[in-house]
Image (cartoon, rainbow, N blue to C red; front, side, top):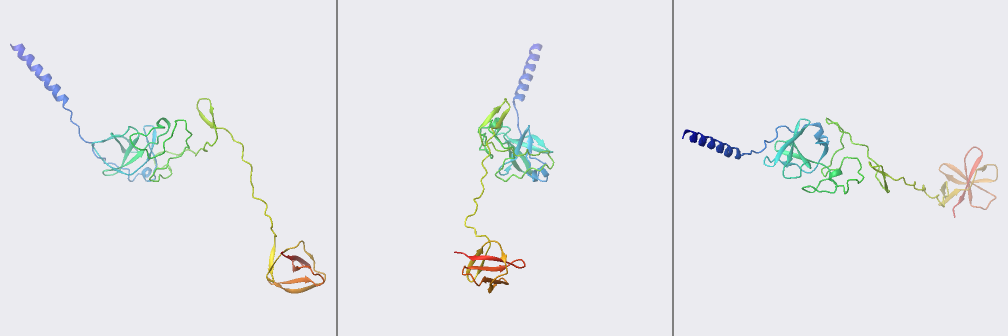
Length: 257
């Protein structure tokens, strides 16, 4: 009789323990106390490095929700959060004030090329994993500044030249652009109908008529141009005037037809 009572007590204890273990209570995530509002990397718009990938600022700020958001890491002493309702490792949330977080999104390229995730991505999606990608920071809708490396050590790669021609496979590591023939050099056409130096005298246009001539001869003064005397040959009927240049020389000008 005593052994039966002991067995009953042990069974009751085991059943009570199992019942207590099955009662799991969850509590909301505590709101962040540390924010990135005054950190240089956030002010300068630098990307956040998390889990071996770069995440860029994307979209408007969101309110903290302790029922769906959990802490997933930290960056330069600032806690990072993830929304459990979206695809893992697609968006991280950075607290910037009490109760407000800034989303940072991972560009969908490389192994994520051709996918859209749980929501429409903020950055252009690469169509194929082997698509040539220019090594620059993507432009976010909120106007991402150029990273300058404030606290986190991040320096963007030199922009690569866009692949415009057909590509050829080099070994098994990637692609290189096929060299293209240089385009022919095109220059402006030589001007036609250019009369060179000309002056305006007696309401007519006079253009240079060749090299200067000696001032010795039958010249008579017929007027003035810009403070210089204007001459013509007294024994010639051609419409040519002369202006003095160097000592003892006249420059001829003919009337433009």
